[in-house]
Amino acid sequence: MSVPTDAPILTSNAMRAAEAACATGGTPLADLMERAGAAVADLAWRMAAGAPVLILCGPGNNGGDGYVAARRLVERGVRVRVAALAEPATDLARAARDRWTGPVEALGDDPAPAPLIVDALFGVGLSRPLAADLAARLHRFAGRRVIAVDVPSGVDADGVQDWAPPLAADVTLALGALKPAHVLLPAAVCCGRTLLASIGIDAGRAMRTLPRWQGAAPDASAHKFRRGMLLVRAGPMPGAAALSAGAALRAGAGYVVASGARDVPFAAIIAEEGESYSRRLADPRLGAAVVGPGYPASAALDRDVAAALESGKPLVLDAAAIAAALPGLGETSAILTPHEGEFARAFPGLTGSKVDRTRAAAKRAGAVVIHKGADTVIAAPDGRIMAAWPGSPWLATAGTGDVLAGACGAMLARGDDAFDAAVAAVGWHILRARAIGPGLVADDLVKA
Ligand SMILES: NC(=O)C1=CN([C@@H]2O[C@H](COP(=O)(O)OP(=O)(O)OC[C@H]3O[C@@H](n4cnc5c(N)ncnc54)[C@H](OP(=O)(O)O)[C@@H]3O)[C@@H](O)[C@H]2O)[C@@H](O)CC1
Ligand SMILES: Nc1ncnc2c1ncn2[C@@H]1O[C@H](COP(=O)(O)OP(=O)(O)O)[C@@H](O)[C@H]1O
Ligand SMILES: [K+]
Image 1 (tube, rainbow, N blue to C red):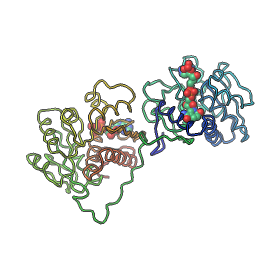
Image 2 (image 1 turned 90 degrees about the vertical axis):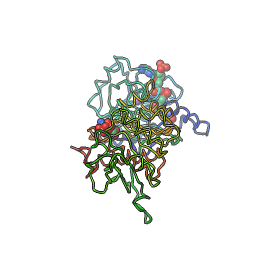
Image 3 (image 1 turned 60 degrees about the horizontal axis):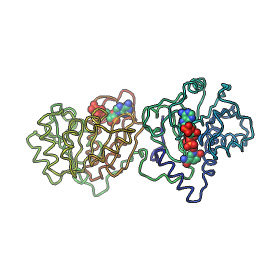
Image 4 (image 1 turned 90 degrees about the horizontal axis):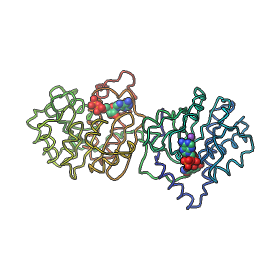
């Protein structure tokens, strides 16, 4: 499973708007469909490697892409059959169908499978779950290699509904831009490897997949304080703060103070008595502070969060510190790092896809939100979104969230904009997890 890095993502509505803008700008929609179908054909030609191909066409423009691909594949000498669910229902699809000169079988007659199936039944226009009889028909193709055109048919492209597609894809070719379904669970796992055919649409930069993390080496003028000084506040489970502090050093902070933690992973971490916390917050060299790792809700947490907010420093707020800080967050530059349960508690009543909910939470809080999980979504209050699918499933182990909070602190302490800091920290976290792989424990992210 993979998606292209630093690639645009559009919802179905935004896609239609981009499509319309293209048409207004002088590119007819038929040209877009021709480019889409050509890209599908090119991929199918490579994947078929000489074997026959069966293209399943739906009634809309997704089906239109299928007819174009069929024509293009025949031109390249591939043995192609087409099976249609229904007659084309749009002018574009009808025109594409009319230029396909081969026979069209009926999907309802259960056509024989081929080694490669191209699923061009439904794309962003799916308006309800697939009928049971169609799902049963598609199940019969399971086990063949499958290319999904735009999205696997049956998936809600916007990622709001968790409808399951009957036929998971080996490769999904996203058209114009990725859609939320390519980066959100449960659909993302059904897409296999997602590729992007940009087909000349201007997809903007508001919502994207994570860029590959590339930590720049410190420049010649660097010194420890300029690289960022970070304070990590320990709670009743000081091991969590120790992991955060260690991660911050590894992620590039120049100077890390752990307040109230004794057993820190590196001698280079300044482990201080908890009493010096408020004094440290006032240190003019301090770039940022982390509160929350290993610190359950309590009056003490409330006091520590209040002191952190009072300091005016950029903050990383994790776990119970998120809900504790929200009422007083004001203009504080902050990154909030909830997992699903913490998110639901801190931001009740939000609906829509994980992207919609994370965007709304960032706006409500006026802070950057890293909504963690296998399909991590990062949102800024100004609407910027970054989707981190697929991370590394080896991160599903205790303490890795503490490591992420520390990495966020390092990026904030060096002066990054909070959204850029969150993106860099998530990228660093995933890259390190992938490098370690099987058997990863949170300490490895810090020590390895
Ligand atoms: N964006 C771009 O730039 C480009 C987009 N392109 C392509 O267009 C695709 C979007 O096309 P689209 O809008 O025509 O919708 P599509 O997904 O084909 O399906 C709609 C049809 O399905 C029907 N229908 C819906 N649900 C159903 C169900 N459960 N069971 C049965 N029927 C159902 C629905 O009927 P209705 O809901 O009205 O009953 C309607 O007839 C996009 O994904 C991409 O592949 C490229 O060609 C070029 C550039
Ligand atoms: N299945 C998964 N695939 C990829 N990343 C995951 C998965 N499960 C959890 N993660 C990541 O691991 C981290 C876990 O954080 P969290 O739940 O706060 O753990 P802890 O509180 O024990 O430190 C997050 O960065 C999350 O995105
Ligand atoms: K499809």
